[in-house]
Length: 183
Image: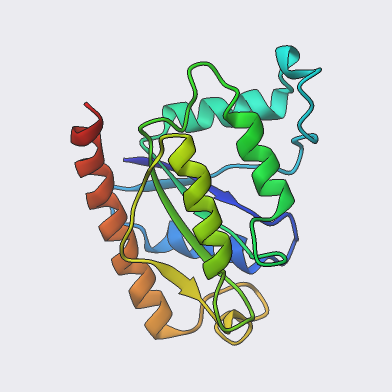
């Protein structure tokens, strides 16, 4: 199973990108997680939509060719980071719309206590409109993440590592079930 993973952060030392790298390492043997890149996607502008930027078409194709999408997002001002929402807005213009009937899992890491709960809730709302098949449970809210990752971005908290591994098994199973629902 092929999963495209997208971080909602562009920061070099992003805890959410680190969370996705840990997901790559902890994924079940039959799951391959590939990191997508939103860093070169320009601000959405419908005037240039007919000539979709290369960075957008590349991400659209990655999503189309994947069996599922995994998003790790920070929370900015109680919501979705602008760069992530921008990337979703651009990708949603692909024909056919690539998020439709696509299994999606959302997680996030934050130094704060709530671990991106509000941003994840808003992402769920966006994907309802885009007809994505978002996994409801389990949920991953890595609060206090500054203490759970070391300076190299390695997840050192054993309980979080174990839970992330279980989450990835649940996501694999959800993706398999969602394929049958979408058929």
